[in-house]
Image 1 (cartoon, rainbow, N blue to C red):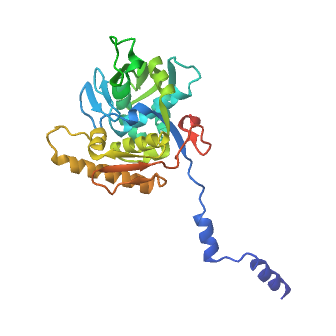
Image 2: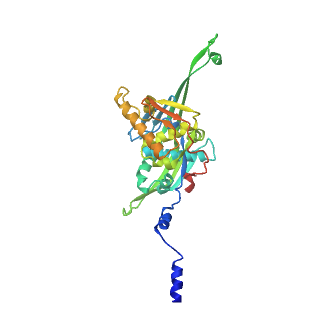
Image 3: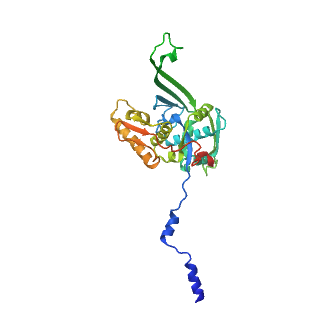
Length: 329
């Protein structure tokens, strides 16, 4: 009888019920968040959404910016092109050498995919984008018109200079190579039993691209950027983060300007598509606010455009909540 009593007491010391079991089941560590950088210029005008099979691509952006991509084979494109651009930019920003070429090395394609946080099945698409970037360059032109006092330009104007304001158009251009050189090795089994492997990547970012990124890059939540499925959604998210960083109060962006920047009409005369494209942009903004950027303050009720309000910044440089995408490589 004594032994039975002790055993009964022992087993009763660990009561189990469904609520306790469910409590431990629901406990999961928060997923790691990663940050990267993207050139702020590419939040205004970016890569084509899909493969255009062209050696030249031009896109107009906001603030008087026009982007022209060139490549001897094919310009980079799509969502994987954007992810690779973000990785290249991040390495440029983090380089200790400023205004100088930056060498990036990967032992295998798997290492590059690991940094991009992509499955090995995406190796073909990533290598395709690397082929596009390796000899590509981008040219940008920005035209800004302002009214300024005439006396400020007396050294370039015939006297007497105007006493009132003058209209000033400032034109800024630049032509920048993404890389100076790319090298990799393809190893093939001569027996043709095991296929081939690609590795020993060396990517030398050009000094002008590294300097451009170091001066003009915006930190983004790479975890979010990668999860957004559409290329247009990635562009809009990066742009929202960038605009919010420099916004003091609020700004209204007309419908025409949004469409021109994110989903430009192939034919300017085809105004029927304007409403369709604008509706798609609004859907992307709604999705971003609902799933990825809940702090975003934006009014999308007007059919004439949207109003952005100053919102809590989702990510800052050296934000301790995030790990850099390069930290695990």
